[in-house]
Length: 214
Image 1 (cartoon, rainbow, N blue to C red):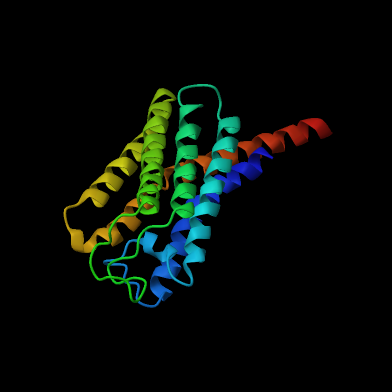
Image 2 (cartoon, rainbow, N blue to C red):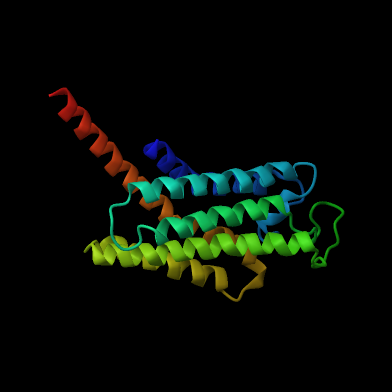
């Protein structure tokens, strides 16, 4: 069960990005350079992105449960998985409450910025939660790996945060949508942690099997 939950954490991030990009390049009227991926949740095919948000959010939550079970005692055992769970909850909220139409998408929508509705506000809150959760997870695991003497992993965690914040906050609004996608993809460190723990769990299970048969 623990390894199955870790697989959920491994799959969540890449799946979310892959489905978002497939839609970005195939949905009529969608231009990634100026349309945020949240707009993919609107229109006749909006259900695909809504499902993407919710399903990947659930996968993150399940992965967080598996990660908490897999991590050895020490710094970040509780807080790291908690932040990853927050990322998942944020994606679920962003999926359940759609953004507002604008920037000409879906086709026929106003060309300018939309007026913010209550569900649009909740969508932004969800997206912010997911981003903050992923950032928090990276920082917590940076401290954990530093305490364990795993310098490479600690540096990678901090570098992931720096790259995501710099790319996402770069003051060039004409490429904001693209940069947000890249920044989200850059937050793949929790996926790497889940994959690492899955490897450990697999090795442990193999040793237990050998011990039981001998």
